[in-house]
Structures are given as structure tokens and as C-alpha cells.
Amino acid sequence: MTTKNKLIRYNLILGSKRISNYFWLIISFLGGSGFFLAGLSSYLQIQILPFTKIDSISFIPQGIVMTFYGSIGILLSLFLLTNLIFNVGGGYNKYDKQVSKIEIFRLGFPTQNREIYLSYDFKDIRSVKLSIQEGLNPKREIYLCTKDQRQIPLTRVGEPLLLSSIEEEAVDLSLFLNVPLEN
Image (cartoon, rainbow, N blue to C red; front, side, top):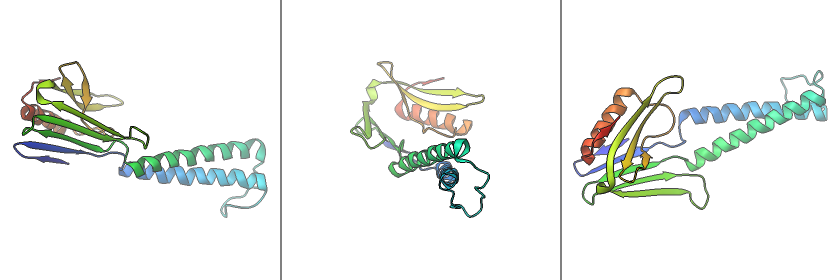
């Protein structure tokens, strides 16, 4: 989401709260729980899952492997749930011509440094860089290049944006900041 006016531009950055992460959370939890309960059923010799037969599953080695894979699936789903709850990667980019400042804010994991806040003056910005890499793992990213050779990523992580929209966004930003656009 981008809010634009003549003096302030505000880009909201979507973090982990995407539909694909909810989908993988549910899939990994259900799959992990199924494997874990099947392994536990083979150990206890009790029918825990109503739609399976544990008669043919011996605890060593199949039950142990199923319990291990189930534990990994459940731990992966807990990791995804933590990402979703804390909206890791979410934040905003704010470009303010009134005070000639750029603010970049992102959320991380709940640690001592959960919030990442960067602030730059317009005079410290050298250019806006558009990086496009096609292929098996396409990347379409916009970077803010500073005079001290830093490249700060401005776009969200995840699904690549449409080529036309990211080009338009990079051109708009370079015109707003009155800096050149690199390729």
C-alpha cells in the first residue's frame, strides 16, 4: 500500500502475514500432527488416529521415523505461527520532503533488537537502484543507495512483483527523491 502526496510518500511493507504462510502453517501442522500421532500409536499400540491401522507399523524403525518427522513438522508450524503473530518483516518506508528525511522501519523476532529503524537525510542518498534477476528464482528489488556505498532494500521479501509495477515504483521514487535511477 502506497500513500502519496507532494511532500510525503508512505509505503506499507507487508511482512509475514500472507495467505501463503497461513496455508503452509496449516499444512505443516496437520501433516506433522498426523505423523507424530501415527508414530506415537505404533509405540503405545493404541489406535489414536481413527482412520489408520497401526497393526502393520512397528515402532522400530518406522514409528521412530514417523515421530521424528512429525516433531519436525510441528516445530516448523510453530516457527511459522511465531512469524505470523509477530509479523516479521512488516513495516514501512516514509519519505518526507518537509524535513528531508527517509525513515525505514521493520519488525523482527521478539528479541532485544526487535525493531529496526533507519533514518537518512535526502542529501545522503546517491541513487535508487532497480535490481531485476529473472530465471528459476526471480528477484525484483528496489534499493536505496547511499553515498557511503550502502544498499538498503526497500521492497518486501517474498513473491516477486510485476515487472511493470516495480519499474514504475522505482521511477516514481527516484523522481520524488530527485536522485538518479540505477539499473
